[in-house]
Amino acid sequence: MTDAKSLEAFLRSMSDVNLSDIMAADALFSRKKKPNHPPSQTVFVGNLGNLSQSELREWCTQLLGADNGICHVIVHTEKGPNGQKRSKGFAFITFDSIAQAQKLVDNSTGALFKGSWLQFIRCTVCHR
Image (tube, rainbow, N blue to C red; front, side, top):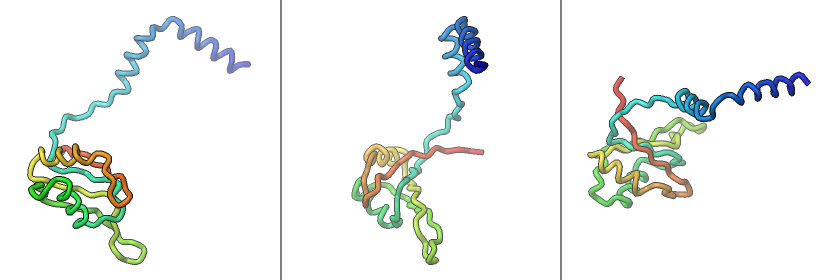
């Protein structure tokens, strides 16, 4: 009974509060300030599965054409149980320009490659 009475008292005390005040306070406290970092020429590729750097570079070349402007493709790897390198499932692709990086993100949203839905996110420049 105590819980029901305290809930009822709480609800009565809240009846005097304006809903717009609650929403404004919630928006103020829940909003995280995100720094305004400039975009970079690098794209994060997630959900890779076990793709190699050459396979990822070849797939991007097929998608964007021969003049794609790819500078570097780095697939992050770890040592597997049998001692061989295997993909951690993500990579970074660096392009000549920001526009080419954005073109990859725009053209590859929801791309399916070797049974995996790849995820492409533009990186930002963060100076510390």
